[in-house]
Length: 566
Image 1 (cartoon, one colour):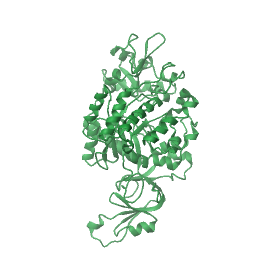
Image 2: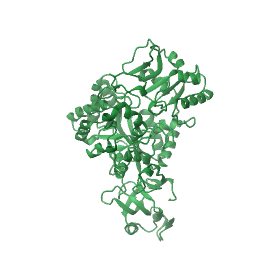
Image 3: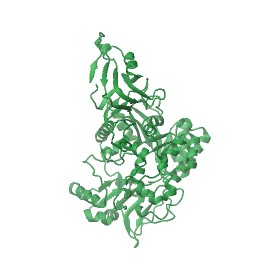
């Protein structure tokens, strides 16, 4: 219900009057007043938060009142790790089905073959063996059975399966030497199975074979931001763009059409010599924090290791003998270090010197250690604490790594989706002792480390069926319950509370972008970003947290999704 408070003010003054939201339970995350029953928004800021009487007293004549029907309000939600442009472009030709088995992959390939030109590589994105019913990757023969001599491949950015025709085109045979930064998997007879781990120099051109226009990229970003609004997301960190991606954001911002505040991470290769790395970073014409409340430059990022889901994450010790799901057996294999140690050190020192925040994709414990070594080297030049360096993913920090991160003031950008969807398989790969340190959220928070919650959303629009699921309350439920996709609980001692999970998706994300004084909680003076929920997050039964939907999303004081407010 909306009603006007009577006013004799002129139209021009009334147009700037505020909005009183009432009949609501407000989870403010404001330490001074953690709960409220009403709040006042004027322009794009919260002005008053408290009792209805207090808020009405602060509201001027001509203010609008909005009855929220007893619904719960939380601060605007912040996903600290997304890839919205690529996720939207993945479905530019139509929805990508959820593929949970090799027959489903074959069916999708057959569909592509019926619609794509004969010369085009049939490309299936983001296939992880840990999420397939067979608990293995398809082979080249599986792909051949679906599309014959057509060029075809599956891919997840770190591991690909090529069919026989594509292997032949690339001249990958039994005689091909193993790359230093990956593996060409071969069968007992020495023939390639089609699976290639790492080795981006072999497959980079195939992954980038589809080009998109500026208009397509712009539309993709705009449409995905609207999808984020529907689940209460008002801010995010895009975790990997180069110049082209920055230009897409700049154009959407120039048009005044952004509906998600975004900090954009600048991705660097960090290859060559340490001097090459230094020059690469020195050539970037901006630095962390450049921008405004809508769009700003975030951290520098590189990709230190491979992936935990594909057996190329760089570990402290060998994977061991339970690696069949990855398609190889090598008891001495520790994974892939994509960037030489000395280059990671140079990157951290240069970032620190120039005023950049830094992060890196680090999925294995060994990669975390390499990154923290680099951060310690930079810290010896000058303290990095104020620059808020970050560990991205950080799936297996041990007690020593956690202590080092705390000492340096390093934060973590974590994705519980990997624990939920992939834990049933990864727990068996790593065994009970190592699995104790699989996304140890409780240990990180108890150490006083800032931990932000994110999704690593890469594929599909659907908030719960995407890779990875970006619905914030689905992620919070995972963090609170530690429940995996098979129904079992892995690491129950690492559960966190509901309020801690909510902070991961609000204030912690704001802290990562140096904006905790501007957003992340509902308190006077902060940006008026909030979400109105269909269920009470604090009292709903634990298993229903994942089912919470967003009735209305307000960004910058304006409704961007649902509800019946102005």
